[in-house]
Length: 142
Image: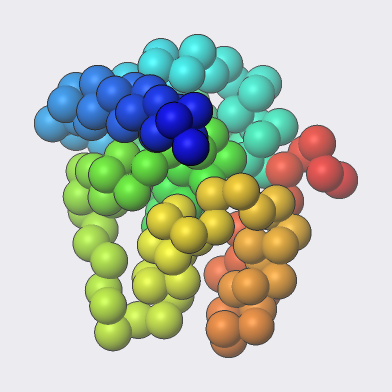
C-alpha cells in the first residue's frame, strides 16, 4: 500500500511540475511536453499514428491542432487531464459536455490511460463514435 502511495506521490509531483509550465500558446505548450518526456519526431509518429508534418506544424505553430490529435498525443505519452485540458485550451478547444465525442476523448485521458489504442478505439466505437473520430493507429501497431 505504501509503495502505491509513493508511486502516486511521484506521479503527482511529475505532473505538477509539468502543469505549472503550461500557461503558453499551443506550440509552446506542445514543445514543453515534448521536452519533458524527451519525445523526438520518430517516437511521436510511431506512438501516435500522426504524421511528421503534424509534428512539425505543431512545433512551429503553423497549423491548428485537432481534438483528435491532442487526444492521441496525450494518451500515447500518458499526459494527465490537466495537460490535456491545457493543450485543448491553447488549441482553442474546451470539452463540450453535450458532445459525446468530446466526453469520450476526455474519458480516455482520465480513465483509460492503461488501455491500448485498439481498446480505446473499441470503446469509442461502442459509445457511438464514427470511424473518422477514432484515434489514429500508431505505426508500431500496424
